[in-house]
Length: 258
Image 1: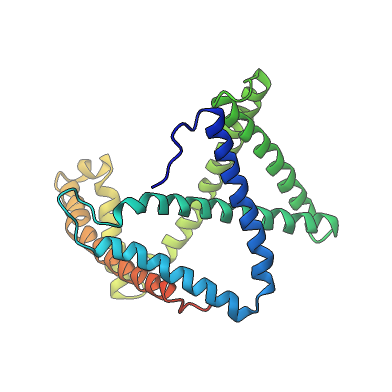
Image 2 (image 1 turned 90 degrees about the vertical axis):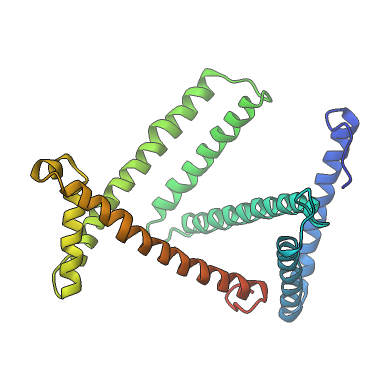
């Protein structure tokens, strides 16, 4: 693979910036071209690129390897994965653009509950500004000032983290409500489920050992001998479903995607 010999030199930096600028111009040029194509043409391009990409990764995985644990496609996996990261970054930027556009329209047109959209936009701009500045300061590109350090700590440690904790604590009440509905004894299976849950919940806390020295062992046996195999079976089924969905995406059979 072609690499820049000295990326830290001025010439190497210039080449890197030219590559990035060229890729950006190429992408910006492809967007109007794709919009100008009819729907069938766009779908054909998406189908071809998706199939070739999936075939590349599948072929590299199934091809025999040599003594160095490689085949002729192995060296190209890392650049391909880097390209996937670039696509992920572009998708993140597109999603951010759509989010800002939606809430900005809500604020401009004064739609219902537009105040929440205004709070989201202000929070987004402020948090993004401090986060980007903090990242640049950690890399030594900008000076790290007390205002930047305290502002980022206030927004991230004292606001975002606390809001996340509050949100997950509220989710606990919904989990309790769902557990109550699931444990209502309406059948024999529900009765077995409730009895097993009670044994496990009491057995894994110190109260279980106080009630009976055998209760923690019973709870551990239920978790390791009954619950673990069932979880593996569920994960196996989810894996088969994921494989089937991946094949459908690879062959562009999912109409909602393509």
